[in-house]
Length: 497
Image (cartoon, rainbow, N blue to C red; front, side, top):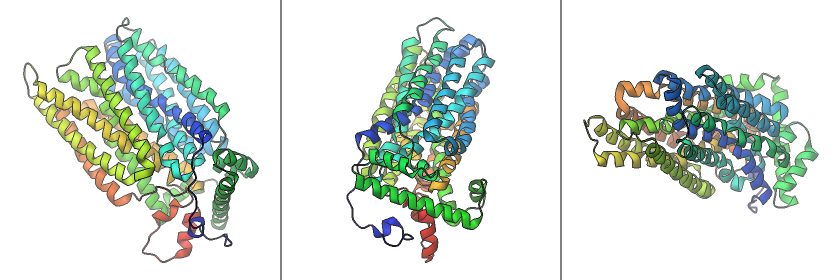
């Protein structure tokens, strides 16, 4: 370690793997619970929209816009969150996310009309955009490398928990009077938002953000709390400060100003270009898979299959939610043992097979007049549960992990924000077009299209995504360097960004 220019991992030698203490786990859980806001909205909206359509007499096109507008507007929050979190810190960005969603939830719960309801979803969407970026970013920056995968995948667990909670609320509140049931369903989201905003008093600021702002002593105090011993805290602080110093030297040498981050994104180096392709690509395929749309519109799919009883429809949703929750826990537990790539490839190939089976089942249901074949209904239900389960093993949690860990320190907040903005844009596009396309090519045709998307996604993941398991955030940049080039200086520069 005598040479300050040498990458830390190249000279450190074998060392004891740092482990997360209870304080790190608590902080990661509290930050990740921000994601429950999106999950609850996805779950509860899948049932609430049925009552909204009947109560407010809206068309299926208006229904699509109502569902999808939250995801489109979350694009605004995602784009703004990078700069915001760099300016005010990770902690207060979490508060901002919860507060914005709280206002949106109150507007939705009190909405007297379709226009008022749309306004509430616009505001809530901005809050969702903030929360989706900041939760994995904050967790990645406080967690040691050995458990970063598990802890950074927690946002997906809480999204799934929120979805399941939304399904249960649909089932429990379906019997309330028309006009009251959906308002309570949507308004209940205000309560977790209040709790999440209040939890910030127990959470420290990100040590990497503190170092970036020159507050070294504060960063050291946080690292002592989040490390197994003071030696580990000192080692982590040295890595972070060295990376920040090299980053500042690089910025000064190239004359970058406040617009340097986005200018670099537009004219990236080869290594950064690979990082952008990886982060944007995995977020694109996460939503192009149609997972959100499948969850939003599962009741519509099974109504077309001949199941019209609302309690039964919501019961299927609860089964699907339980399946997602079980498998996202499996992924979280094994992510740091088996790595990102194996679980991601398993999940994406499994989704392709499940969507193909769902397409086959839906095809027979579409062409059945009178009573629908029971076997096709069973195949469709099993295939939907398998699809969301494989998503929860692979794309669901691993997208958040990759997005938050592949970017170098100076670019991390705004790079993560850019990648998640693509995620939100695709989610909105798919959610707002799913029913229209399905009405033209049938639900079966739509599921076959999504199957093809996941085949392409699997190929992309296989060829473009390296394994990041067990590496520190300061080491990961070297994975994206062009190994054909023997330019050690360039590799060293990217590693220390």
